[in-house]
Image (tube, rainbow, N blue to C red; front, side, top):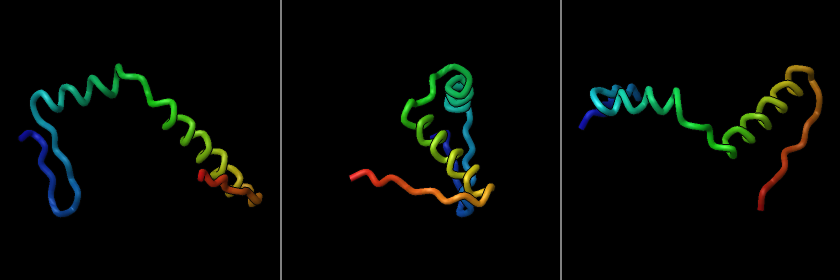
Length: 60
């Protein structure tokens, strides 16, 4: 197996796995749901920095 991790959470990739990871980071499209979550997080972060109130939307 090419993936190694330690007690402290370090992960090392080698060989084909490392090459695929680099290719994935450079070429694959981001998940739209992840991008939406990131946008919501940035919006909340800005409000916190400005000291503004915000409400979290709960998904049932």
